[in-house]
Structures are given as C-alpha cells and as structure tokens.
Image 1: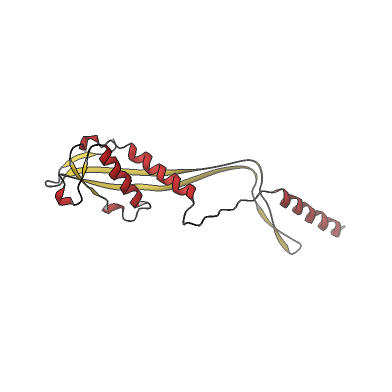
Image 2: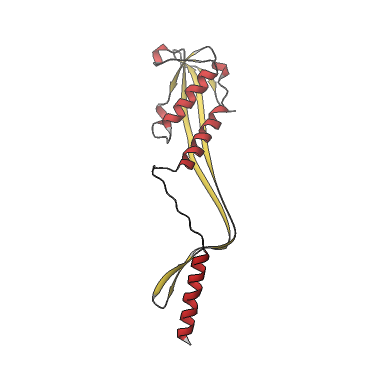
Length: 169
C-alpha cells in the first residue's frame, strides 16, 4: 500500500514538473536591457515635463553635484543638458561663465515590479526523506514592471544667489 502511494506521488510530481513552465533571467550586463530601457525612458519622460523655457536665452551652468550617488547620473545629466538646449538656453562650461545656475536633483530613479498570481505558488516539499519542488500552478498570472524617475530643478542668479525659477508646482 505504502509503496503504491509512493509511486503515485512520484508520478504526480513528475507529471506536474513536466507540465510546468520555467523562467530564466539571463543578462551579461549588471542590469537587463529591459530594466535599462525602462529607466532611461522614465528619465526622458520626467525631464520632458520640465518647462525650461523661462530660462531661454540665458547662459546656464547645470550643477549636478547632488546627483553623485544617483543611478544613471550621466544619462540624466545628458538628458537635462539636451532639454536646456532645446529650451533655448546656452550651456556654460564653468559656473563663473554663467548668468544662472541650475541645480538638479533626483528624488527617485529605478524600477517597480508588481505581480498577481491566482493559483498555487511554487512549493518545496519533503516526502519520504527526499525533497522536491512542486512548480507554480497558476490559473492567472500577471507581472508588470515600470520605470520611475522623479527629477527636480531650480535656478538662481549666480552672482546674487536670488531665485529665478523652479520646476514643479
């Protein structure tokens, strides 16, 4: 009786294991291309929302000192410089050559992932001294990943330090 049950249990695990699906995350870079695309797109969307036209015609120094520990700092800096130029600003290489300083900061840059599973998640079991994993059995499964970027800027007159402009509300 016990031998028959054991054979049935092994057969069930084998059938379930063969019917299951696998997922492998494979990347030769630090982050997957999908994550990089999600983040770069989020940065571009956040910067595009910033209306820098009030600074048009001015010589601007972009100060990114407060983004030193920000992921994708160099890409964000380049997108900000591009937006400044597209808005009619002139870029100053040194703060001394600028009329206006623009300080940039990033509140958040990254990805969020959410998922819903209706069914049974993968489960590890111990049976007769042997461990095995029953694969996930899902009726419905959905996983979403999105890129998130919160970017903020403010401008000040270089000589007086008085405020000129700020992004946001």
